[in-house]
Image 1 (spheres, chains in turn blue, cyan):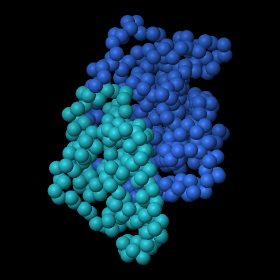
Image 2 (tube, rainbow over the protein chains, first blue to last red; image 1 turned 180 degrees about the horizontal axis):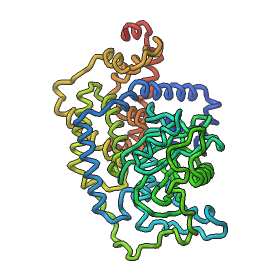
Image 3 (tube, rainbow over the protein chains, first blue to last red; image 1 turned 90 degrees about the horizontal axis):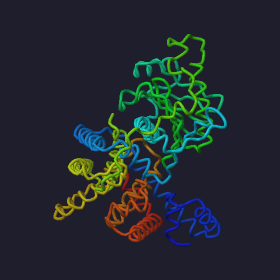
Image 4 (cartoon, rainbow over the protein chains, first blue to last red; image 1 turned 120 degrees about the horizontal axis):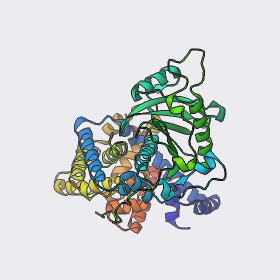
Length: 312
Length: 171
């Protein structure tokens, strides 16, 4: 066992097989175990000392510098062909990249699962970028002190407020039946208008977010799954709205949640003693999804140039 | 919001935390981040979309910092440890915890800069060892040995610290 293994263990940079080996070793070696405790305490102390800075408001010039940089990076990305745009590149660059068209398992048995290349049709980058934003927003807010802008004490008020922000009726489905409690939501600016982020929590404190927005009007797409690091995301579009679920879950767990969310969205907001001021049947709940073959985007009519993205 | 908007927001928050931990003075730290963002803007064409934006930004900020340190070598600016710790703690912690944090801050100051950088990038910012190696432009073996020396030095000094001194440090 090397010294570097001990550090990699503390820093969570070991694969699970190696981690188990280190743990076995630590059970035997008291001195090494004390060092691990000490290093962890150091990490915790550093976070106690400096984490509050994360919540400091940016002063004007820093905010402006960040905005200018964001615009420039966007402009550079926009000059590239769609397949080398940020969403795609981040996806392709990720070692943990898994993209699975789940249409078959989802919408009917016996269908052929579309190959990942089929899902990489030109209409998809916007939805992919949307899912990326959902993942980033989850990472940013799920453990934040300011995880929600408005709590879920009054769900009608929360839904009405977010519907107003998005300019169309949305609601956070009731997921109590599968063990998730709605704790609130926030609205975020995004490409193509505001998005709503609903935050849920399990009894164990694990957070789940549902991201709802309109990255591209009236597109239909099969359910897709992607995992960035530990954050898994399921995303799909239906009618005018796109949805992305994100959280620290494995694929099967998240798929169960996605199925429930999908059903709840179709059946409309749960009836409460007070009549919600929004229609029970929201436009996004219809029409029923078409068979997989029809809703899978077709491959690009003209394939993009085969040149590689330029290295810097 | 731009495609990079949320991602950048998160990274800028990290850059500020690291800068503050590294240079201590709030204004100096924000100046460092500001200059790094300006440099990043001027080199934005060199950033390849899809590569590691966070590591790219940290690398740029590291280079800015190296230049600043070189330029200011003649006049090191030190901020009193007590003041920083006092202002940093937004909520009153119990006395023992405050002593520990004050000690941690003091010991951090005694580390050579290159060890402090590695410790902060790994333990505070959660960068992978390979990312730290890329940011600091050193071999990964160097990252590991600096990390090891930094953590052992902090451990030994915290264990051997004299509580009376610590109590006097944090009022």
